[in-house]
Image (tube, rainbow, N blue to C red; front, side, top):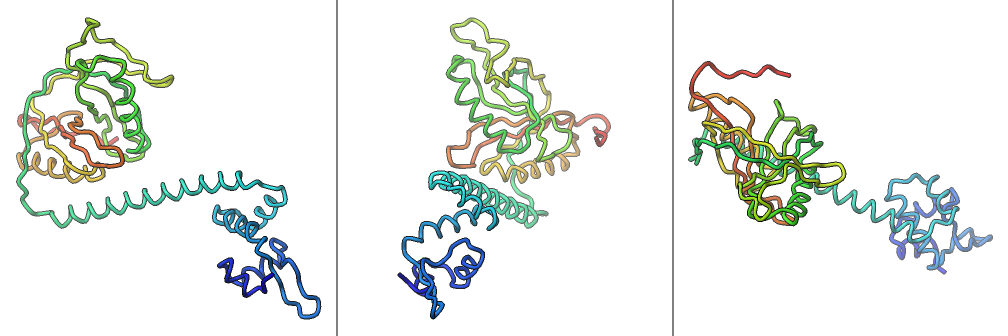
Length: 291
């Protein structure tokens, strides 16, 4: 057996913590010398100590840990709880990295203000297009991504590839709200239905979601700019396009769209997206009332 200092080194926990666990009855020494009061621990107590430390990392209080251990929680149960906590920490780290990337992008945008970048803005007419899509209010961008992944996994296997064009979003939100993204998401249809002779008017994506076909209206003048890079940086390209529209003394006259020219690769956030904003040169400035 080991004295408390030796066990502290072996277990890599402080002696003060071991004494405290002893005081509250969470982990008592294997043997205490009645004459000297020296505490002696056994290596066989390490699994019990590790369970306590794991449950503590899961955010449980010491009283909760004591009750859980007294009920005989198995190693598999604790392992499952730890895996869940691992997933939560991983997601929190990813969220933190995304937030850091967004802050860096905003700083870059501030530093670039006043400069005159060379923009490949193209103003073009967009014809009426058939659109297989659904409209939802999404709680975050990640939810939109998951839907796109699901759609690209399911729809191409149930419809002729010749009838499916690019994935496109119609932005219905009057204002940008990252917690309530009112988007229509779906496939632009090419007009070639394949062997069936016609394009279906509805498509069951899941029990809760149904894609329906309708016509996106033609737009006489659509100002477009291609965004290449991380989706979290898309505000930079929107800012450039908005500044260009303002410099032309034009006005926005309807709902914007996004067309995915290249989907993000698995494990990456980079994409190629054509941003589309309908504009007009004539008439008085187009004003929308704040909602």
